[in-house]
Image (cartoon, rainbow, N blue to C red; front, side, top):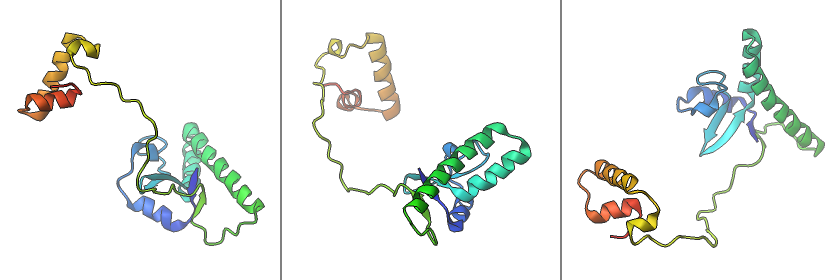
Length: 155
């Protein structure tokens, strides 16, 4: 879990309009998450304000969700204090953002052989016709090779 504990992050969260549904307790209610460079963060100030709002509205489900985040933060805070970390001026508490390694190395992987005949796919002819029609519909005027490529078949 990653917590943004500074006010600047809270203001950034409120200013942005590109939040995904998982940034809220329910769609449009109790915004408390923020994505930065594809990494999801919990914004502490939003959690605390959401807890107050949920108490005022007697919204038990939202309250329990936000209190869960508060407990997670309290655990991280206690661990940091126990390690003697000075939290003055700290913006992030929790796991550091993942490092971008540039390229990902995929180890040994299994790639099945390309089917040579329709019967090799294990798909019924009805489903095969449906998939071909979808490929034609999505591409407009595809060639046979393009259809085969879309379906992962030999041409």
